[in-house]
Length: 191
Image 1 (spheres, rainbow, N blue to C red):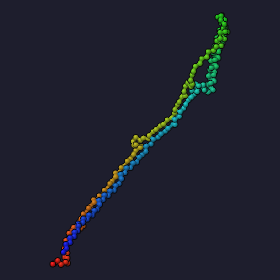
Image 2 (image 1 turned 60 degrees about the vertical axis):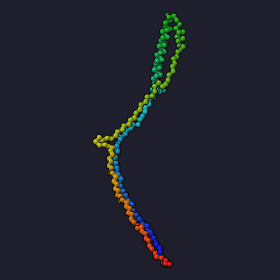
Image 3 (image 1 turned 120 degrees about the vertical axis):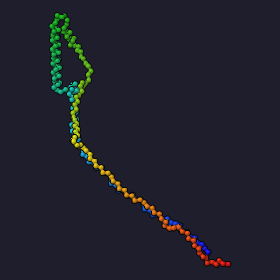
Image 4 (image 1 turned 90 degrees about the vertical axis):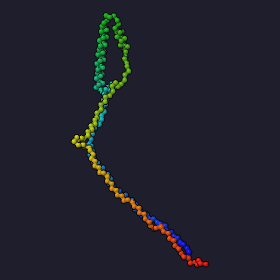
């Protein structure tokens, strides 16, 4: 006699449906329209005028007319001084009643001449500078409305969300079982 035991294990089945998240969006939009400002700029290029006439004149660099004038002036002064000297010499010679040697006195005076000298720097005056030029900046304005403006238009974004939850289904695919069977053996067990 034989006893047979067989066992079947239980089996679990799992079926899943994954969750799903669908999102769609429209981006936000910002629209700008600008009216540009207007600026008028007028410029006169700078000019530097340098007058060196007086500086050159103080160093002796003069034009022909000025040199002629100064020479004439010096000549006139020299002529007047010489005329005065000759007149004085004549008065000295005419005054013989004073009793001294007038000719020796005049000769001694004319023999020894005293010159005055000094150190000086040139030019005595600097050049004259004059600068011309201008810039004019004018912005166009209209007091009733702004000439330069920015118009804005904002369109907000939209978001659409669609969510499908996930599912998990658990079931018993196979039940557990124990099977006990008896088998008769063909052996004679009698003695």
